[in-house]
Image (cartoon, rainbow, N blue to C red; front, top):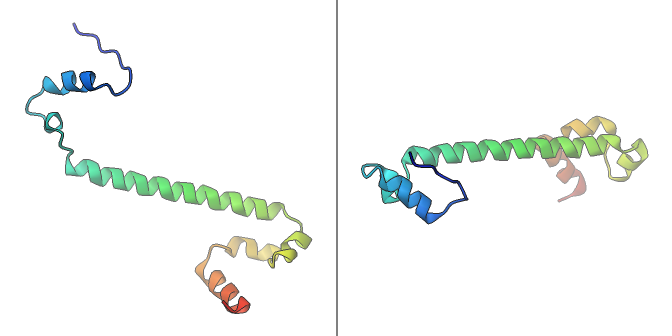
Length: 98
């Protein structure tokens, strides 16, 4: 019985593993098309999740500010939940004359 010791991605390990299965597409250096699609889907999901948590952090930080500090940056407490809506951004740009 052969024992494999995983020490990272060593070329000898990959070569030994894939050479045992000559019909395997991975042994020829090809990546199945499904793997690329799955990678894009998982990557997009991870990006959305990171963005969600980033937005929650920003909203939590704004919620910790006092009413006076919010007024200094031109926000009211009721607008904190709306800061990521496109309508709010359009209204703010129109108010500022951008």
